[in-house]
Length: 344
Length: 234
Image (cartoon, rainbow over all chains, first blue to last red; front, side, top):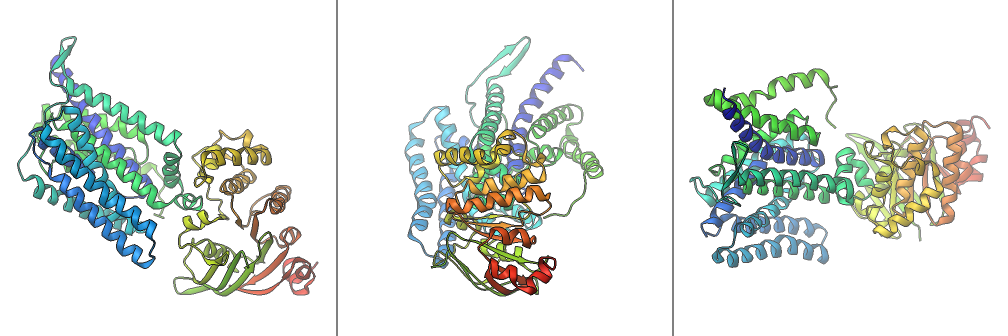
């Protein structure tokens, strides 16, 4: 193989790998804190990408209305719960988070969309629309099941994934879209042209990792999330509410999903169901890391990206098969080397 | 008014009822101990009081029904130091302490931490060390210090002497006895009846999920049945 081709493949692999790394981190985060294997992670990527693509052509994205719908559903859940123990402050807080917030975002979108804002405003608006969905999805689907087993939570995840994919089809249609890059054009490093969008991807991925590191190491809320992951009962005994850590984890995951969507929208055509496959590759990386280590997940994700890029060159028909087959030797190796213990 | 009043507390694990209607009231500023053999239901009683296990019956805290959740009870001023300590093993001693004050403001946390480092110099020395690497006695100290970071009004202490050398037991119970002067009330569950009776004001004897005898520690220490079964025949 020519060196030039190899260089292109490596660039391609690292670019995709960076996205998988972000998604893998989100999966590890959600699993560690809530024990949920978050299959719908990919849907947030698709929602993010499609929202940005709609904003690009000056259309109101369906996700803005979907956000309001999710908010109303979450509010109804709270209403049913507080009916058992009525309290005005709790209800007011719930209304602010579940009704006022999504409606405010929807209204803001209504005003911003026709003004044809620049790429960064659109990217930001996309993230603002998609990120709160993480909270509502947690409230509606997972919070009522916080004591359930990992298996029940997994089955729930499959359900949420199918529901969100269906909603994606309803709101965006079956057509694929591609967004404009944050910064157009490219420049060359030595002989090799590098797209400006790829630089955005590397930069944002690194910034997100550094940001997460500081969040988990330096802030009390971040430490509370780690504490919940380490010892669930211990965290409750110091007054850390499961709902707080769960909600935070899901909002972070949805934000990461939306950011990933914004990053890939200009380099891939995204359909309503594209997110699943992208999320699954992040999942491969997370599994290789045993759903526990952030650095190993990031490295494994880059590896997944590289394997995918090389496979697409040598055997493009088998690209996906080769990537997902990576899991099998890793699982065998892990099952032989780790101690088996019963689920709590 | 009692600080904590448990009435007709029943707890079942599956079909087996392990607490058969326990009544217990304690006043503010007291150290109350529940002694009894292994498996008598002492730990279950504390877990029920804290909301860690579901129970029937009524639990009043400062005359009002307790909040339903564990976290709500922590916010109300109750704190459980579990028999298993429940530390965050892969986090540093200092992070464990910080999280103990999760519901407190940053300034309250800083103040409480400085105060607790004075009281537990060993924890200060090891503040950068991971909690999982501490010795048994140090872990118990950290569990106690982490609980005190929340500035509790009522501390529920489950077997603080479990698995510790006698010298460390004396040290830890000494610290517990001192806590009374800082306005913390303590419900202490202990298998080590002799040690518990030394620091407590009143005691309850629990057997097979029921409270069989109650009284001041002097009365209990003089009760022939208690002496016979729990104090090694005097």
